[in-house]
Amino acid sequence: MTKIKLLLLALLQLSIYAISFEGKVLYIHDGDTMTVYSDFLGKKKNIRMLGIDTPEVNFNGNTQGQISLDARDFLRSLVPIGSMVTIDLGRDGDLNTRRLLGTVLYKGQDINYEMLKSGLAVPYFIEPFDKEIMYKYMEISERVFLEEIGLYALDVQLPYEFRMSVQNRVGTNYVGDLKTKILYSPEDGHLVPPYRRLFIRSFERAMQLGYKLFTK
Image (cartoon, rainbow, N blue to C red; front, side, top):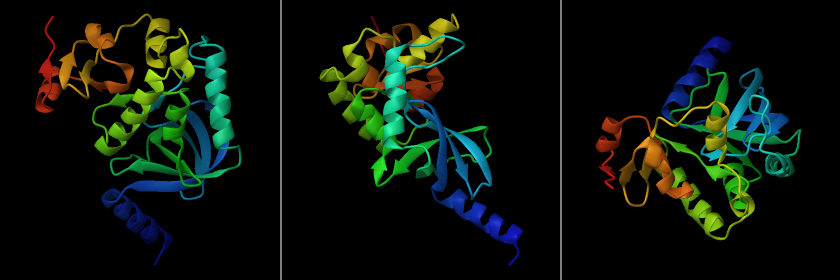
Protein backbone atom coordinates (compact mmCIF):
# COMPACT_ATOMS: atom_id res chain seq x y z
CA MET A 1 0.00 0.00 0.00
CA THR A 2 1.42 3.40 -0.97
CA LYS A 3 2.20 6.12 1.56
CA ILE A 4 -0.63 8.25 0.14
CA LYS A 5 -3.16 5.45 0.66
CA LEU A 6 -1.88 4.89 4.18
CA LEU A 7 -2.23 8.59 4.97
CA LEU A 8 -5.77 8.68 3.54
CA LEU A 9 -6.68 5.63 5.61
CA ALA A 10 -5.27 7.25 8.74
CA LEU A 11 -7.22 10.45 8.10
CA LEU A 12 -10.42 8.45 7.56
CA GLN A 13 -9.92 6.71 10.89
CA LEU A 14 -9.25 10.06 12.57
CA SER A 15 -12.57 11.38 11.28
CA ILE A 16 -14.39 8.54 13.08
CA TYR A 17 -12.45 8.51 16.34
CA ALA A 18 -10.81 11.18 18.47
CA ILE A 19 -7.91 12.86 16.71
CA SER A 20 -4.66 12.66 18.64
CA PHE A 21 -0.96 12.68 17.84
CA GLU A 22 2.40 12.89 19.59
CA GLY A 23 4.62 15.92 19.45
CA LYS A 24 7.89 17.16 20.89
CA VAL A 25 7.61 20.37 22.91
CA LEU A 26 9.78 23.02 21.26
CA TYR A 27 8.65 26.17 22.99
CA ILE A 28 6.14 27.32 25.61
CA HIS A 29 4.84 30.80 24.89
CA ASP A 30 2.63 31.30 27.94
CA GLY A 31 0.48 29.25 30.29
CA ASP A 32 -1.87 27.93 27.61
CA THR A 33 0.10 27.92 24.35
CA MET A 34 3.02 25.84 23.12
CA THR A 35 4.75 24.84 19.91
CA VAL A 36 5.35 21.17 19.18
CA TYR A 37 6.92 19.24 16.32
CA SER A 38 4.94 16.24 15.10
CA ASP A 39 6.43 13.46 12.99
CA PHE A 40 2.86 12.48 12.07
CA LEU A 41 2.14 15.93 10.66
CA GLY A 42 5.70 16.45 9.47
CA LYS A 43 5.85 20.00 10.76
CA LYS A 44 5.65 22.34 13.74
CA LYS A 45 2.27 23.31 15.12
CA ASN A 46 1.13 25.85 17.68
CA ILE A 47 -1.14 24.29 20.31
CA ARG A 48 -3.76 26.31 22.19
CA MET A 49 -4.81 24.36 25.26
CA LEU A 50 -8.51 23.56 25.22
CA GLY A 51 -10.85 24.87 27.90
CA ILE A 52 -8.38 27.06 29.76
CA ASP A 53 -7.16 30.63 29.61
CA THR A 54 -4.08 32.02 31.33
CA PRO A 55 -2.84 35.57 31.99
CA GLU A 56 -1.23 37.23 29.00
CA VAL A 57 2.56 37.52 28.85
CA ASN A 58 2.34 39.79 25.81
CA PHE A 59 -0.90 40.73 24.12
CA ASN A 60 -0.50 43.56 21.61
CA GLY A 61 2.38 44.85 23.71
CA ASN A 62 0.47 44.60 26.99
CA THR A 63 1.12 42.18 29.83
CA GLN A 64 -0.67 40.99 32.95
CA GLY A 65 2.61 41.01 34.81
CA GLN A 66 4.15 38.48 37.15
CA ILE A 67 1.13 36.17 37.29
CA SER A 68 1.44 35.60 33.54
CA LEU A 69 5.09 34.60 33.94
CA ASP A 70 4.15 32.34 36.85
CA ALA A 71 1.61 30.54 34.65
CA ARG A 72 4.10 30.16 31.81
CA ASP A 73 6.84 28.87 34.09
CA PHE A 74 4.50 26.43 35.81
CA LEU A 75 3.52 24.96 32.44
CA ARG A 76 7.22 24.67 31.59
CA SER A 77 7.72 22.72 34.82
CA LEU A 78 4.88 20.34 33.92
CA VAL A 79 6.11 19.70 30.37
CA PRO A 80 9.79 20.62 30.04
CA ILE A 81 11.14 21.59 26.64
CA GLY A 82 11.92 18.40 24.70
CA SER A 83 9.10 16.40 26.30
CA MET A 84 7.03 14.10 24.09
CA VAL A 85 3.38 14.93 24.68
CA THR A 86 0.11 13.69 23.24
CA ILE A 87 -2.23 16.28 21.77
CA ASP A 88 -5.88 15.20 21.85
CA LEU A 89 -8.09 17.24 19.53
CA GLY A 90 -11.26 15.25 20.18
CA ARG A 91 -13.60 13.93 17.49
CA ASP A 92 -14.25 17.37 16.03
CA GLY A 93 -10.62 18.44 15.85
CA ASP A 94 -9.24 20.06 12.72
CA LEU A 95 -5.63 19.37 11.74
CA ASN A 96 -5.64 22.06 9.07
CA THR A 97 -5.93 25.17 11.21
CA ARG A 98 -2.93 27.39 11.89
CA ARG A 99 -3.26 26.80 15.62
CA LEU A 100 -4.65 23.54 16.99
CA LEU A 101 -7.03 23.49 19.94
CA GLY A 102 -6.55 20.46 22.16
CA THR A 103 -5.83 18.73 25.44
CA VAL A 104 -2.17 18.18 26.30
CA LEU A 105 -1.42 14.80 27.89
CA TYR A 106 1.93 13.95 29.49
CA LYS A 107 2.89 11.00 31.67
CA GLY A 108 -0.74 10.13 32.28
CA GLN A 109 -1.71 13.66 33.29
CA ASP A 110 -4.20 16.02 31.69
CA ILE A 111 -2.00 19.12 31.66
CA ASN A 112 -4.93 21.44 30.96
CA TYR A 113 -6.55 20.17 34.16
CA GLU A 114 -3.32 20.62 36.10
CA MET A 115 -3.13 24.25 35.02
CA LEU A 116 -6.66 24.84 36.31
CA LYS A 117 -5.82 23.02 39.54
CA SER A 118 -2.87 25.36 40.12
CA GLY A 119 -5.12 28.41 39.99
CA LEU A 120 -2.93 29.88 37.25
CA ALA A 121 -5.57 29.23 34.58
CA VAL A 122 -9.29 29.92 34.42
CA PRO A 123 -11.84 27.80 32.56
CA TYR A 124 -12.75 29.04 29.08
CA PHE A 125 -15.69 27.21 27.53
CA ILE A 126 -17.05 28.27 24.16
CA GLU A 127 -20.01 26.27 22.87
CA PRO A 128 -19.91 23.63 21.41
CA PHE A 129 -17.78 21.97 24.08
CA ASP A 130 -17.30 18.37 25.21
CA LYS A 131 -19.60 18.00 28.23
CA GLU A 132 -17.46 15.46 30.06
CA ILE A 133 -14.38 17.67 29.90
CA MET A 134 -16.37 20.81 30.66
CA TYR A 135 -17.89 19.52 33.90
CA LYS A 136 -14.59 17.97 34.98
CA TYR A 137 -12.85 21.31 34.51
CA MET A 138 -15.72 23.21 36.13
CA GLU A 139 -15.53 21.08 39.27
CA ILE A 140 -11.83 21.66 39.90
CA SER A 141 -12.15 25.35 38.98
CA GLU A 142 -14.92 25.85 41.53
CA ARG A 143 -12.73 24.42 44.29
CA VAL A 144 -9.77 26.57 43.30
CA PHE A 145 -11.99 29.67 43.07
CA LEU A 146 -13.55 29.13 46.50
CA GLU A 147 -10.14 28.50 48.08
CA GLU A 148 -8.73 31.62 46.37
CA ILE A 149 -5.75 29.83 44.86
CA GLY A 150 -3.44 31.42 42.30
CA LEU A 151 -4.86 34.33 40.34
CA TYR A 152 -8.11 34.14 42.31
CA ALA A 153 -6.17 35.47 45.30
CA LEU A 154 -5.14 38.55 43.32
CA ASP A 155 -6.93 41.57 41.94
CA VAL A 156 -6.35 40.76 38.27
CA GLN A 157 -8.63 40.67 35.26
CA LEU A 158 -9.63 37.34 33.81
CA PRO A 159 -7.45 36.81 30.73
CA TYR A 160 -10.26 37.07 28.18
CA GLU A 161 -11.53 40.25 29.84
CA PHE A 162 -7.99 41.67 29.75
CA ARG A 163 -7.74 41.02 26.00
CA MET A 164 -11.03 42.78 25.36
CA SER A 165 -10.02 45.78 27.45
CA VAL A 166 -6.72 46.09 25.55
CA GLN A 167 -8.68 46.09 22.28
CA ASN A 168 -11.29 48.46 23.70
CA ARG A 169 -13.98 45.90 22.94
CA VAL A 170 -16.95 44.47 24.80
CA GLY A 171 -18.06 40.86 24.72
CA THR A 172 -20.63 39.76 22.16
CA ASN A 173 -21.29 36.20 23.34
CA TYR A 174 -24.17 35.30 25.59
CA VAL A 175 -23.09 33.69 28.86
CA GLY A 176 -24.82 30.56 30.11
CA ASP A 177 -24.66 29.46 33.74
CA LEU A 178 -23.77 25.77 33.57
CA LYS A 179 -25.39 25.07 36.93
CA THR A 180 -28.65 27.04 36.77
CA LYS A 181 -29.15 26.99 32.97
CA ILE A 182 -29.87 30.72 33.10
CA LEU A 183 -28.72 32.78 30.11
CA TYR A 184 -27.18 36.21 30.56
CA SER A 185 -26.62 38.95 28.03
CA PRO A 186 -23.01 39.88 27.23
CA GLU A 187 -23.39 42.91 29.51
CA ASP A 188 -24.55 40.77 32.46
CA GLY A 189 -22.14 37.86 31.97
CA HIS A 190 -20.09 38.97 34.98
CA LEU A 191 -22.97 37.83 37.21
CA VAL A 192 -22.04 34.20 36.48
CA PRO A 193 -19.15 32.78 38.56
CA PRO A 194 -16.08 32.35 36.30
CA TYR A 195 -16.05 28.57 36.70
CA ARG A 196 -19.66 28.21 35.48
CA ARG A 197 -19.51 30.34 32.33
CA LEU A 198 -20.33 28.88 28.93
CA PHE A 199 -19.99 31.37 26.09
CA ILE A 200 -22.70 30.94 23.46
CA ARG A 201 -22.60 32.80 20.16
CA SER A 202 -26.33 33.32 19.62
CA PHE A 203 -29.57 33.62 21.57
CA GLU A 204 -31.19 31.03 19.30
CA ARG A 205 -28.50 28.47 20.04
CA ALA A 206 -28.85 29.08 23.77
CA MET A 207 -32.58 28.40 23.54
CA GLN A 208 -31.86 25.15 21.69
CA LEU A 209 -29.61 24.14 24.58
CA GLY A 210 -32.42 24.71 27.06
CA TYR A 211 -31.30 27.97 28.67
CA LYS A 212 -33.76 30.50 30.07
CA LEU A 213 -33.12 34.21 29.81
CA PHE A 214 -32.14 36.07 32.98
CA THR A 215 -34.58 38.78 34.01
CA LYS A 216 -33.70 41.58 36.42
